[in-house]
Image 1 (cartoon, rainbow, N blue to C red):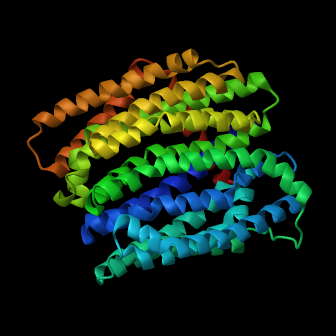
Image 2 (image 1 turned 90 degrees about the horizontal axis):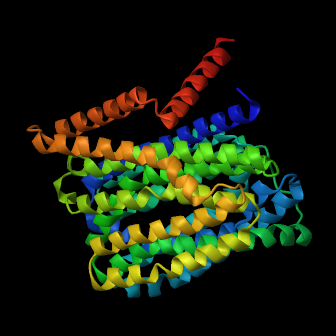
Image 3 (image 1 turned 90 degrees about the vertical axis):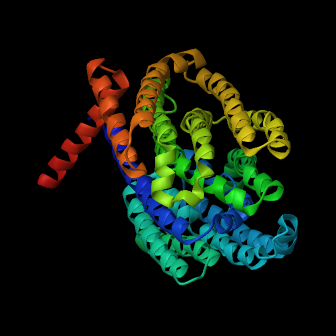
Amino acid sequence: MSSLKQKTVNGLSWSFIDQMGNLGISFIVGIILARLLSPREFGLIGMITVFIAISESFINSGFSNALIRKQNCSNTDFSTVFYFNLIFGFLFFGILYSSAPAISFFFEEQELLPIIRVTALVLIIDSISIIQRTILTKSINFRLQAKISIISSTVSGIIAIIMASNGYGIWSLVFQRLIRQLINSIFLWIWNNWRPKLTFSWVSFKELFGFGSKLLISGLIDTIYQNIYYLIIGKFFSAQALGYYTKADDFKRIPSQGLNTVISRVSYPVLSTIQDDKSRLKINYQRLIRSTMYITFVLMFGMAVVAEPLIITLIGGKWRPSIIYLQLLCFVGMMYPLHALNLNMLQVAGRSDLFLRLEIIKKLLAIPIIIIGIYWSIEAMILSMIINDLIAYFLNSRWSGKFVNYSTKEQVLDILPSFFLALSMAITVYLLGLILPFTQLWNLIIQVFLGVIFVITIGELFKHKDYFYIKSIFLEQINYLRSKYAK
């Protein structure tokens, strides 16, 4: 296996373990907490999500991606960004702390006041560890990150369950996040050797901010767009309705944004190392898109058709209104990894200015979605999100494809076989679900088993290129690990 391929595969493997392990533990903990707590309590947490997310975007300010892209970073570069992040962490903690009464008044939920002020502490904690995580990502060291994430998710999850079982209600959710981020930060500092110097370089700051500032604005726009729906539902519907939507979104995030994070955090530093070799860049970019979308289509179509037995079995009948939200959100989630890969290419090409312009155009197109959500229904809003995502994809792929001569038409033709395979699997599993006479649990097990068998069988029979590519990487990695540990 070539060194770049091995580096990519190892990075993907450990990033997958990190993300899926973290999401898996959080998912299991979330199932238990959903049975112990009410939809309203999850909805209250959802109300403040947008404010925390926006603050975190400012704290990072696009510097992480700028550092990852820069070929030779000095300790001065890292130290400069570290102090900037730290100052902004305290600044936005103060802003959120003082804004808590206004946010509580906006939602007409006075219970939010202390919740916002305590949750805001996560901004300071995150600002301390951003550079530690960036350095590990730049060196494609996801093994250590996986270890830390799994430990922090497990400990914080156990504490949250104990608190919920003892009647602490929404505070179990608040402290789950705080404790997870605190443990994560502590171990990043213990197990990563980097330490900041007592220096701040304006030259370094201007260089990195020149690229990162556009990503800051782009990231800020996208963060608002991704979280504005929480604000709309919380304001114009109810905390309970937001709780149903939040839980459906949590289910959708596991296969969609979980895979998106895995691919993006590995592909960006890897592709950045070969940014000057256009032919090699296109080959690797094309493979990433084909293999990523093969997995995404299968997972999202699969989740959409088993949404009912999945939700009823795992979190109970009181969450039934979440089913339709999850089914619709799965079609939104299909596009996330594809967006991420195309936008990554713009960053690799150094076109953060184009990245920003595209984000502004796409989010202006989303204004009608917000209006639909306010005046119609949550379901109508999600349907509009699907249409907007399709338009956004064509904009992203049109411009990113120019840098590696990989057009939108080529991308669509490359991923269509995977789309139809996943669609065929979903139809088969759905029709089976209509006639199964068993309990929701057994229906879920049988449908998932059939879906897996269908995908493997069709992949083998029709020699599906992307199926065999993923299979070859999986087998190569197993053989690599065997040979490594055999020594």
